[in-house]
Image: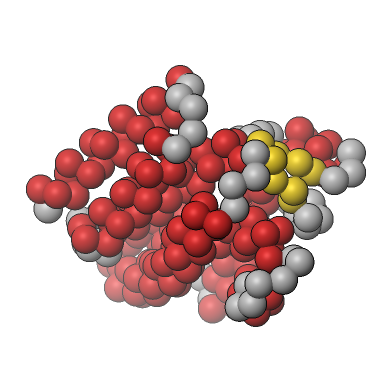
Length: 230
C-alpha cells in the first residue's frame, strides 16, 4: 500500500512526525500482514475443497504468504525500534479513521469454496481485504477490538490518545498472530516464528498484567515451546 511506503520514507530520518508515523506504520503493517494471511488461508482452504483445481489456489496462497511475510518482517522490525525509543504513557494517533466497509469481503468466501476467480477479481478482493484488515487493526490498536462504531466515535471526538499499554498489548497480539504464518503447515520456519513470539513475549511482559494479557502470555509461551521443539 502507498501509505506504508510513504511512512517508511518519513521514518528514515528523525523528525517531528517520527513518533506518530511509527504508530501509523505499525497499525498499517500489522493490518496488511493480517489481511494477506487471511486471504492466503482462504485460498488454502479452497485448494482442499477443490482438489481437481488445487494448484492455482495453492499458488495464490503461497504468493499471498510471501507478501504477508514481507509485511510481517517490516512490522516486527519497526516495532522493536518503536518500543525501545518511545516510552510516553500516552500515544497520539495522528491519522484519519480508515473510512472503509467493515463488511466481510465476498472474495474470501469464494476463495474458501475453491472457486477459480479471474485475476481482476482476485486483485479487487485483495485490495478490499487489506483495507478492511487495516480498519480492524485500527480498532484493535485503540483498544476497541473489532468494534468499528466505538473506534469511529473515538476518531470523531478529535485527537485520539491511547494509553501506551493498550497499544503494546495490541502489538503483542499482532506479533503472536503473525508468528502463525511460520507454522509447519504454512511457511514452516520455526526460527522466524521464535523471533515473533519472543518479541510478543517481551512486549506483553513490559505492561501490567490483566486477564487478557495473562491469557496471551500463556499462548505465547506455549507457542515458543512448540517452536523450540520444531
